[in-house]
Length: 121
Image (cartoon, rainbow, N blue to C red; front, side):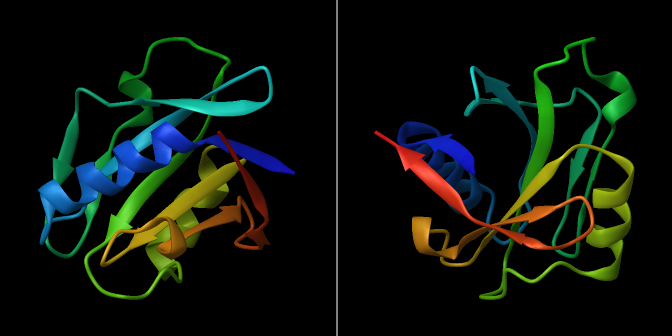
């Protein structure tokens, strides 16, 4: 089961709220089986209808295992563009929907299947 740090979820919620109505997007680093950090791509573009994050600009780091981005609408379902991106990079992908709370965070596999996750306090 996927595990994510509680403080990281709080950070993601705050980042998404601060970027609203634009999307927020970043990569996720996993340490010892727990998602603990976000990694921002230096070549990121955030907008109202989508975000562009460049995985080619990331440092060489085997601990970067997935991504997370926000949806400025109350819908955590992945778009076709999301599913395409999921299939190209990483093992898991979070979508944090408006109003950007822990309850609106949904993780998906690289094939678009919903993943259960545990919050680590």
